Length: 205
Image 1 (tube, rainbow, N blue to C red):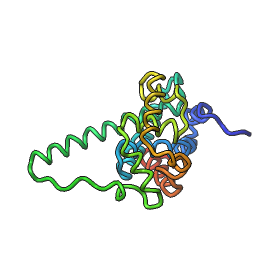
Image 2: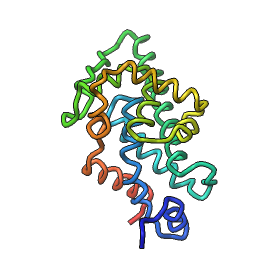
Image 3: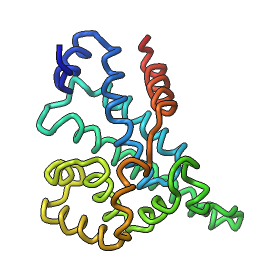
């Protein structure tokens, strides 16, 4: 038997084979992690966003209308979750600043990233404006198509191409051979952790 498509896996889950959801989680962990890090720049917050996104997707799986691919639908959920967390974080920081009781919340990028990764590469990507960084991560690192990226970010396809070109222009030429496998890498131990947290919350044994 060949590898099941996302739609076939979803059908099995909806028929009661809940453990099949693990296949989808492991398949998309890398993508969601890279999206989260590109917006939140914090590993713990990114994993929280991933967990919430997977739970939300699972709980609304019956509502998935297949207009876009499951991957694109899940990407949108993750993007919205990350942006919501970023918005709430900004409100908290603003409140702290107004109280004159502010602690130093700025952490060098080198302290935010996993030690196994290349901090130089991640810093270069983190310096991109968010709208370019997101397109860069989805197109170049997650190899999503122009159409998928357009649907996920709700922008026109020509806009995707323009933003990607600008993002590339902002990065040094010699990053290209390293970015795909070494930047925002989501390793097996993290993958296992996300699966466990999501399944524990959903009471899937």
